[in-house]
Length: 340
Image (tube, rainbow, N blue to C red):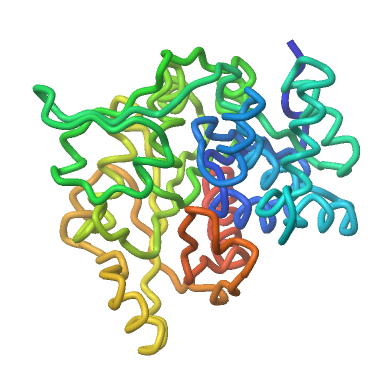
């Protein structure tokens, strides 16, 4: 089996999918070319969901974002991100269609990623956590409630405490050996920010991922979300987010958590408040009791721009983003301190 990494350079594995991974990968690639993006494969919303339902392909959306983040070809990167705004292709990105066409023509999603990586001149490796065609399931004890599908779960206002729910994939997924190898060989493993129950959880619950995180000699760091999500993580502190991350993976594996302690403008806070979303509270007294290192910093980045092409798709977009340069700098400092 080929290794996802070369030798000598710092080896980084980033776990997640979507905007959180895209943001961190875009900054971390300035430090090394030995990056493995391990991608969630349960997405069934938006353009990705339409392509899965109509063509029976594996979800291309998060894979596309990671490929674009690691691309060394600006013009092709922009092309892959281009989203059609009218006609039969309205809402679809070119990159999603490209990956879908490659999978249909070759019969292999892995070959599709390899070809797209060549076209985009990708530095690093984009690794689906599984090649199984899976759907996300979230269920509460004793048949209280069961939700099926990432799109449904993402839009739901939970009637019960999500911390008592079980996340699983249907059918049960077989972990991609390359994902396990990337985690085991890394110097740094980063769990990117993202929705707990639809982005990170579906990846971490796969058998073999948590074990690899506990087994690796790498520093394992979680970059905590900036804001809560109404109906799902209301009132969640940094510590609550961490508990869920480790619960999904079957037990403790984190060496550090990064969290933001910078306050945005009152205008932005009021805009979030109107949607019942709030900055994630830093519960330092509780974090101090935990075995992992807790690192706060000024990690707020630019406010996300509005994209009218996305309005008809049932996908929510966070306004506040992490400052990828600041986060990446802290992550690299953690590894360098460990290696000193």
